[in-house]
Image 1: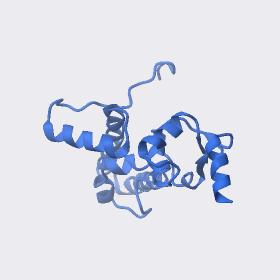
Image 2: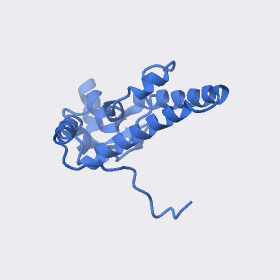
Image 3: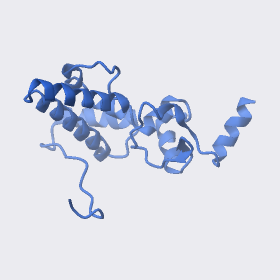
Image 4: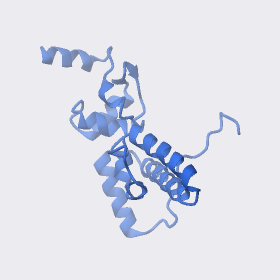
Length: 170
């Protein structure tokens, strides 16, 4: 199993480092989603690559086992919000893009909910401990928010921003 103090990399770097079209696409995604470095993008790409590999490997299984495991995969992807419908097909999973993973990051959701004016401010709020999910402080901008927890994202109760929002509402 390995030593828990020695965690493994969660990402794989691109095979070839200097492909111009890939570099331009990466820079655009970094700016759009306010990522700190390309490693955060590579984590999302690796996660998507593993999901697609899992979906393709299901095709080699016997029919009854395939249906059971496919239903588990679709349910898991729907619950984390990557899939928009619980009745997805393998084609829907194979057509996923890295943007669908990046949209589920806490940083993006905080910005989309209007808790921050910019995507960069959303990252700063999270890192500084102003954002909580179900009242529990989360300080990782790359945290993948489940569909169920999305409605519970708000300012941390002791945050000065939580108090200003209450004053503005009344």
